[in-house]
Image (cartoon, rainbow, N blue to C red; front, side, top):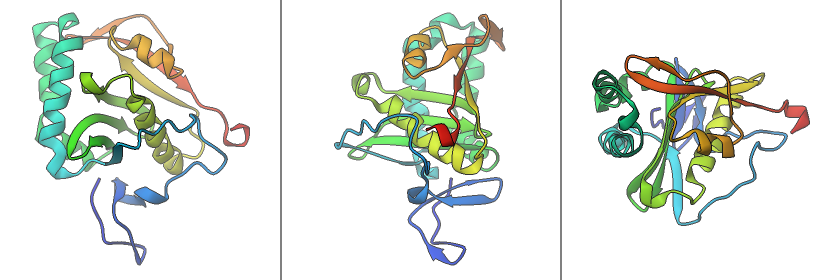
Length: 201
């Protein structure tokens, strides 16, 4: 994601860009309805990740990982995950096939979702004291708007969930798509969210 002044000659506040294709963030929507009903907490704001946010996001994700996910990973898995969430790694991925959205409480980042290829959740973390406020649900809803704006025929979203997060994803409509697996020392359960056709929304 980069902040831009113009796209196709029109001024915009911010945009989501993947592989050189940019869409104004504020203009993204699902024409025929939304997968979820809005559950916005008016005290919170949502926007794309900026380069200057990556260090704070890295620290937020590391805290959540250490508390909820690391206990089921090997030492190899912990190191692999730490490499993935380094600030420079976020910046590198943002230049290719990833985009991220964040949630802020005033100026503090309290949630983040990272998407890959418009069809896979790479990261979804909310700081513990802000959980159970609908933040993960709203991050997913907004991310899906962007994904479907880029991929109108998108039929499903996947995620490799930790054991801890399985009930959370189930509440969001995801279902297990296979048995628990381990890759690079990180254990996960593959899950999928089936999306309605737009004309059925």
